[in-house]
Image (cartoon, rainbow, N blue to C red; front, side, top):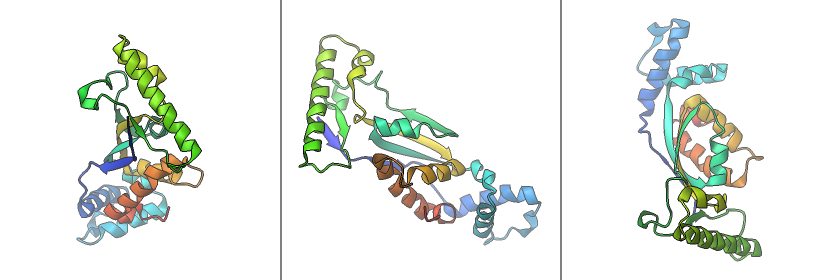
Amino acid sequence: MKIIEPSFEVLTEIDADALYKRIEAIGRTCYKSEDKITDESAPKFVEMIIKRGHLSVLEHENISVRVICDRGVSHEIVRHRIASYSQESTRYCSYNKDKHGNELTFIKPCFWDEDSDMYKMWEKMMIQAEWTYLSMVSEGAKPEEARSILPNSLKTEIVVTMNLRSWLHFFELRTAQAAHPQMQEIAIPLQQEFSKLLPVIFNTGM
């Protein structure tokens, strides 16, 4: 059994200046103000449309992110629209194979210390889930059958592609105080990364 921390990787190569200029070129179509485009005008234009709430212009650009999290968190991620998803399949992935290390991988829960009783109870259940799954498969169960006993804590890998407006909405919901702690564990540092890559759009203080 393996226990890991959640993580993410931004897959899209982002050139902020070029992206701002594309958004400006598209957005100025609405105002027929293309004559106002200069080498430096794009960031201010993007700031302006965000302040005006003209967020549909941001839908012309998207970003893809690979997220490693538990399956419970992934169920929350896939509720977001508009987006595209490609997720590791528990139906087609057989975790008793060499490429999975002949073991299950679980995401460490962020809300319990490792020396706490709660964590020890959780770890005991993960050990039991792994033993049961591997035993069922070794007895002839198909992965799509044995997966029925897999817990939410099972590690999954999901690639998420959203347009910029959808990402803004994602961060608004998933970094909020009411969001699930394990969702915040992914969403807050991801929003911080987006703020570094595209500060004009994502440096919103959320």
